[in-house]
Length: 428
Image (tube, rainbow, N blue to C red):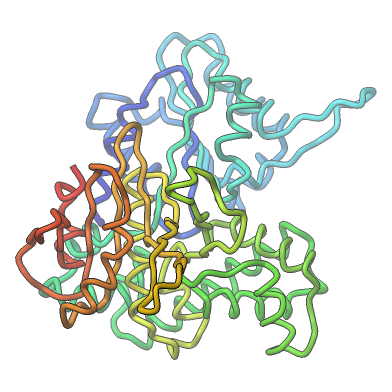
């Protein structure tokens, strides 16, 4: 069993807080193991009896009937009603719960009505997992009115991956950059098995789920082709319009701008990709387009491309982005305009990019992901944007090079990628 203490401790801290605990994340990233194995084991060790833990897995054939809201509510009520001891209700893949009409009325019963009812008993503590981003923030705030508490989990971080890996951290990072952090990979014997597993996940699980959930059966091929385009542009500035043009060039005209926008929303909804907006540091405002798209797991991205496109600069940038999100930061792509005069004295303006602006409460950190810094010219290029930011917040350059962390004359911190991923102290 892979150690997921980071998430387990967060879940334990929310225990019996009066809210519905909603664990979300991409399918197969470990939500069910967290809830039904690790958290279950914690409850048992904490003195909770087995019959006080109600386990419901809506994706299992034997419990399909419980997808009906009335059946599920009646089932739980039959166990907890009239009892005084506490009951822990664990429900897997809650997005599979059906929405049904109330006979004789225009009302419907579905996800939120059921969870509010189950959480309404004085002796119940409700935990659910879901693989749909529509269950996140705004919906929870609106539908639960302060009674929903979400926990987003991700595939293995490099820290978790390395703890389970038998080898040095350099080899571990290379493996992580190629095959990603889906937990099941550790049960597979060789690269061929890992490659086949990841390809099947993308084709048979994620894309199939997206097609079924969004009724896209006529557009299955187009959906997959668009995902290829997104995978190839990972970490690059892009926009729906640019993706549409690339899509038309590569695949012969299929796919309108509206279709591309819709499909991108489907990918984000399924947690396959996430979006980083551009932020004008001096203007203190967001720039609507272009943006950057990052894959939730690099193994899935690489598998979709047949492990052919190994642009390690963008792969490393994606890994850094995922780690920053996992650590709880709000992450944007930074932009700062620089005015100067050229050799002829003519005034010029250059837009400089900062890979990541990371905000957490009142703390801000600027991060540049630089695959190689082979000389002084490259170092100046990577830190040019930092030098134009007039504030005292920490500025970090993360590189592929392995060395002891050090600061230059400007106070910029340089740290190797493995050290950065294994040690959160660099950001404190």
